[in-house]
Amino acid sequence: MKLSELKADKLGRVCALGSDTHFLNRITSIGLTEGTVFQVVRNDRKMPVLIYARQTLLALNRADCEKIEIEEAGA
Image 1 (tube, one colour):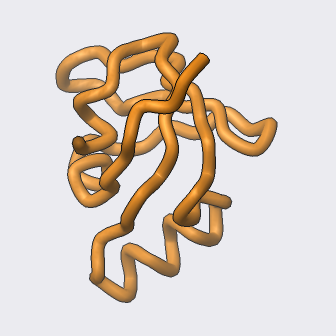
Image 2 (cartoon, rainbow, N blue to C red):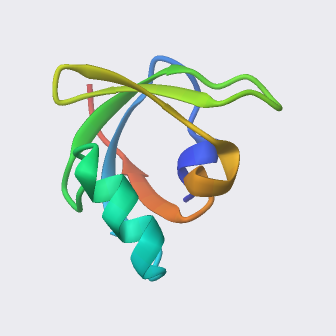
């Protein structure tokens, strides 16, 4: 599933990242790598997705979220 599909307060794990080199450089520089566990803080339509990962609150635009494959993680 895509990151943009996960609802607020759910835990997820990054499974795969898009293949665009510029995107990979940007997203890994903020700490999102394959295997990273995160919690969705807010996911409102037409707004950035807020996630909490590695003790940091991140705002990701929806286009970037479409390039991030995730799986829902247990509580």
